[in-house]
Length: 94
Image (tube, rainbow, N blue to C red; front, side, top):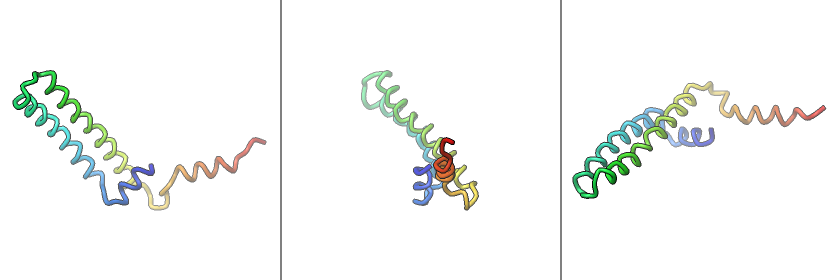
C-alpha cells in the first residue's frame, strides 16, 4: 500500500496507469514489427522483444486497479494496515 500511496501522492492516477498499460500493449506490437524488419534475426528474436515489452502491461493494469481502489477509499482510512497492526500489538497472549 505504501507504493500506491506514494504514486498517488506524486499525482499519478489510475487513468495514468491504464494509459501506460494500453501503451505497453501497443509498444509490444510495434517492437515486434520493428524487430522483424530491422534485425533480420528471425521470428524468435522478434517474439522475445514483443513478449518482453508485453509483460509490462499486466503490471500497469494492476497498479491502475490498486490506484482506483485507493482513490475510492474514504479519507479517514488512509492506512488500514497500520490500524490492523496496532490492534494486533495490543492483543497479547492471555
